[in-house]
Image (cartoon, rainbow, N blue to C red; front, side, top):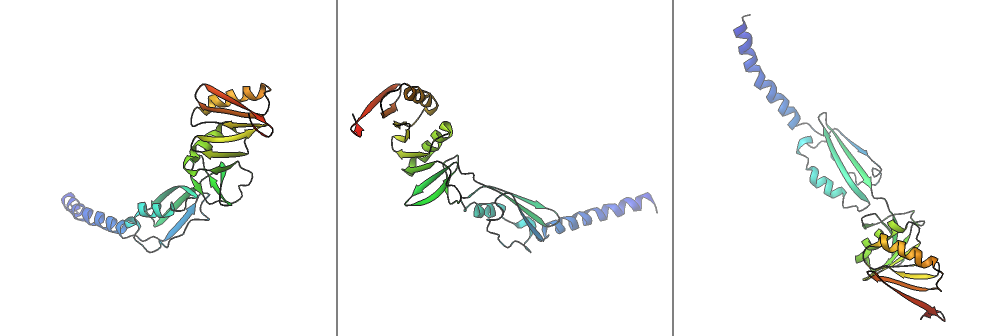
Length: 209
């Protein structure tokens, strides 16, 4: 066979082969769906088998999975042999938000979600609109049992003192609060809402002076 005929044959076959490969991938059905990650047990497992692999609307599928607020992140992978891998990561609670007697998890970004087994975490109550402030304070304090949220910021109790934290600069305020507590002042309230101004109110007969 002459070289010219071989070249001509490849010239004809190449587009046919490419078209066949493209058609194979375009019409490839989903034959297997694999769920991975620590959220795999709670994912709403939509029936994807038999659907065209590369016509799947992965963004819509991702948004559907993220409707469950317990799930923080979703990654989807389509493999050319017909497999779809769905990897999900759950939110990690750092506190408990209590509302009308119900307990919810709260993650590091202040997202509130349904969760179980969180009784050992710090409790947050009060105005949910400012829950991010409570979470920021909890992450800095480390050792705190309960936080109440107001429009003016979180409120905590520690060693006989009620502390009003305000809405910013918690790291600096924690250092100040530690010094105030060690100062030996009678039980009362430290108001740290006003920048460098610290207001101390002593308790008198069970109330504040």
